Image (cartoon, rainbow, N blue to C red):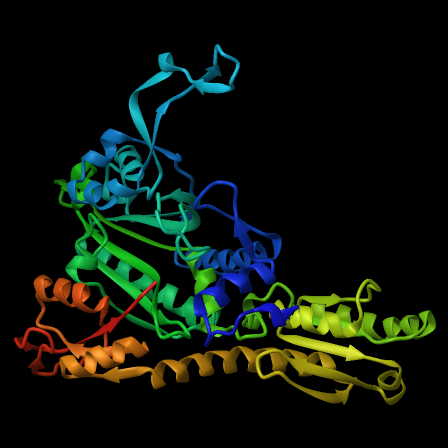
Length: 490
């Protein structure tokens, strides 16, 4: 089955699309630009949700839910915000259908036009800040730390499953604070949580940094981001956290009585990650044989396949295996015992390899006699025969090692594909090969746009760990005070 997947080297885009299909993660829906996330894919997303939700709650955030529909007038209240999203908005104009008089089907009832059009949520800052006006009166009501898990709609013309669809799933945090310092600390804290999740759960190394003014979220004073490198050398923005200043508080008149008994506008943040992380997970680790999933996010961490010829052999193997399954589950390991007779063991091996199951155990009649089991790891495609005794602890340690090894491989790949470039010639040559390019930038939006137009590369971020370094912008020839990360991106 896995042989049908095109290789990454031949056609990376086709490999990605085919892998999603073959691994049963998702598919295009009947609605243009939208996707159906299938059970196996959604179980990965659920694990992501659960881990992130725990991290949010550990830092004092609570979940809430806000309307899908936003009055058009709300978007008009914050000028840069509406400008940033206007071209992507889906608009509801009527609230009723009726049967056509000619019997051809249903039509929009012209008498059911809304007094004010509603925008299908592209992001929730406006509707949430209109609500916060009623929730916040005093400094005692702050900080207000709210997150919601929701779907959003951004009307994309060119779509790709998980990476860019007209409707996608995400979480969006929206917080209000008494001071600028508190809000900025929150913005950084949430970015650090995203980075921790990406590296410790997804096994994807990320660069933390600040977006340029051109790349900043519409309506924010500052945008922080984490950037990941995919196996084709392109960048993928894996999470953003925005310091909103007082922009939305002023737009929606959200004021509070401070400790000095004076009215002041609150300071805001917003931050979010989406099902785009599924795309990152696939493209950062998987190979030509299928998915490679870090154990922490794998729906099935261990699959056990019995190899037998008779029902008696199956019964004996099952009797030996079942206590192990109970031990593993008590240890928090997700296990599947595939004793179905619909397919042969070889087919099952290929299928679970395709689906990225981290560890596979196989036991046959000879293993049963010898007190051994064959254990295979997906990431290295290695296998060995080991004693059955002590297997639970061995598997737990192996899962930890796989998680670590997958991260180290991705980190080494990023290191090998990160380059310092100083001239236009070097930049043009390397950007065609891919990777992160550390190059001097003169700090102007004009140069940034010109580079993007000429090379299709963007400034992914100004790294937090950027070292002061006097230099010359490779494109404009103007002075520069440090290197930034350039790449082509999804």
